[in-house]
Image (cartoon, rainbow, N blue to C red; front, side):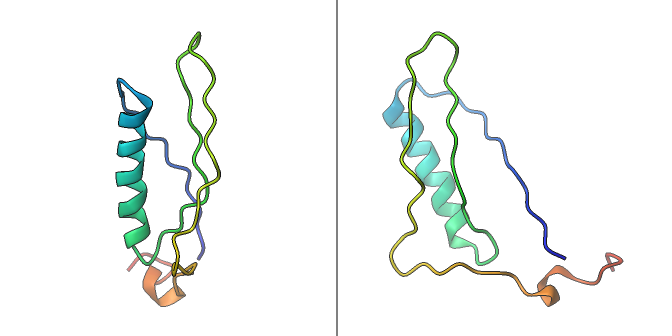
Length: 79
């Protein structure tokens, strides 16, 4: 079975540089896993703040997309 999840991270940072460092850490940890692909990142700022846009998520050099095998997910009945 193939599943897709959307994950919402909530954190506070005093600067965009600090926010970027947090996101770099989280995304770096996700890329270390063989069963997770990072598809996109969306950033929301509080109302009234100036708009911020992010470049597309780049795939690190040498990184290949991994599709977990059905054996890794266990049997369909959860046992």
